[in-house]
Image (cartoon, rainbow, N blue to C red; front, side, top):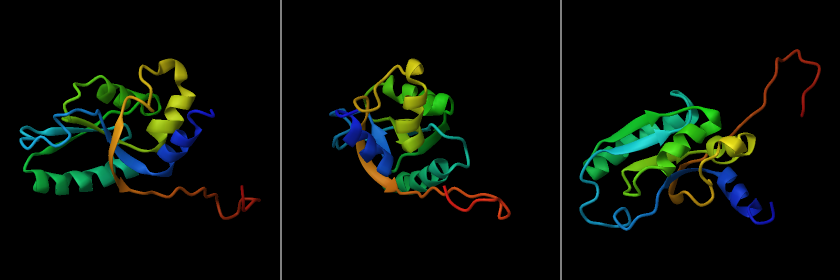
Length: 145
C-alpha cells in the first residue's frame, strides 16, 4: 500500500479520462483520422456516462471526428478497462474512468484483473468531478455514518 497509496488516492480524487500512451496520440497533426471509441465501464445513464456524452458531443465538434460511446459494464469496471488496456495503443480507444472502475473494482476483483490500473493507462485530462452522498429514509433511526 505504501507504493500505491498516493496513486490510488489521486485516482480516487477525480473522474479522469485515460488512454494508452503513444507517439501517434501525443501530437501527430493528422490525428484523428477516424472515429474515436470512448469506452465507459459504467452503465448507460450513470454519472460517468452522462458526463462522457457531453464531452463526446463537444470533442466531436472540435476534432471533426465522431466519438463513439461504448458502455462496457461488468466486474466492477474491469471489463471496460480490459478492452482499453488490450487495445492498440494508437489513441483511438479511450477509457472514461472514475473511482469505481479504477480503484474500487480492482480491489474487489483482484483475481479477475488482467492489467494494472496504475500502469496500463496514462491520464490525458480531467473533465468532471462528482460528489457522492449517503442517504436514508427520513424516518430511519440514525442520521450519520
